[in-house]
Image (cartoon, rainbow, N blue to C red; front, side, top):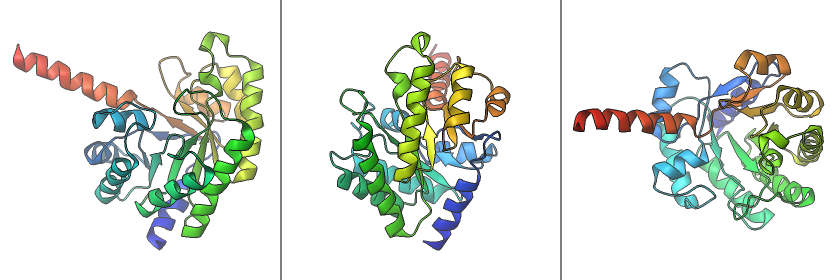
Length: 255
């Protein structure tokens, strides 16, 4: 556990506003080794990618047993810190979320994503409900004696198309970040936001280091750094690119 905690402390130290930690998301031991060989400082799974690689849809359709077993194989394949995407925590109750965190820690993870929407509908949970889930997650980490990084994901920006995002949504994300920080979260993940003014508004006002998901519409890394972002994830992008490359190679071989 002390070795795991050392990796957890290292992972935590990599979250610096203005110097984003880049996480090129992985899905299995092979992708973990490839990304590590490219010079990554840490690794993180993406739930969509892991589920798809195993034949499941996203949204906690992948059984937790398989998610944890996959985590264990990834951790065994690398010395880098590994964070796991736990979606909404695989639990109807806060206590169940705590149990999920305990399993992830036992599997070797040093951090996780924990989102504030219902997996069945994508609708946002009430803040008070999500606060209790984060509190249970923090309690599980403290009980394990690991400086576990809880990346509180808010799905505020998934509620409307990007063209309709506005300052009020950014302010809602900040308010959720404040409540989540008090509950024990360590970072704020706001996927879906792409407008530089909104990203800067969140980074400036949220009490937690901000994680943005990179896609074709987001500003480049240098701009995100100037805006104060501390972490940049790539979500399902790496998996999609890998599968497209395999398909293209297969078509060429089979032609």
